[in-house]
Amino acid sequence: MGAVKNNQVFKGVAINGQIVKGLAKNGVVFWQTFPLLTDYILAYNFNGNTADSSVNGLNGIMTGTLTFDTGRKEGTQSLKFINGCVKTVLPLPINSDKVSISFWIKTTQTETGVVVELSTNFNNNNAFGVFTNDFLVGRVEISDHHPWGYNIGNSTVNINNGNWFHIVTTIDRSLGVTQNQIYVNGSLSYIQHDSYAGDLIGNWANDILFIGQRGASSFPFIGNLQDLKIYNRVLSKEEITALYNE
Image: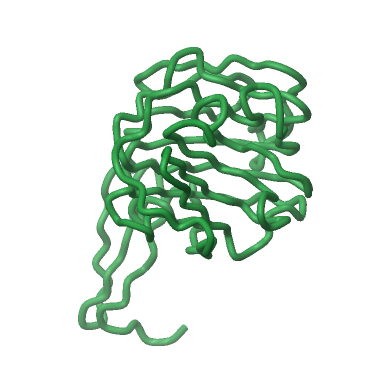
């Protein structure tokens, strides 16, 4: 093992519900811990149910063909989407122009699938969506729409090889055309779609959230999802790393 460099930062990891981060000073590593924030506005772990562990209590309604399957860790479960969806019974209280969506995904699908979509069809509303295999086969996509345009980007790596991947997508409408980001397994992985780089502003409309299909009827996602969390703010890099290492 080499010498510790001055000002070297050790990445944040989740240990016993805390983010642990180290900073080297004069050969000594000083460790800091702070709580792993649980201020999500929606959280489905899909561990045998669709209960929402956020304060909003938006337990999901299952429609179509879905089944609980083995999870990414021993003793856990995931939700396998075949031709169905989970939707909130009431509108998601986004109340913000910022959002972060974190989830684990396992898929081999090559056709366009809806992972998450706010409203029955985000193309007609002030809403956002996360898709697979839309403009680029194998990639995950973050899409934002306002009546006057779109802002769309894709991951730079494929996520449809049948392995588990941790995805975090973020949108911050206050940043102009550079509003979107995608992280795959804790690392930034994003390329902007040149034809869809609108400067969208304002809060999203609170609406029903659909997971796995558009409006419970089309563009089915085929694969497994686990530990889906939505925040109405942009997660820090340390928080994204900690979620990946949970």
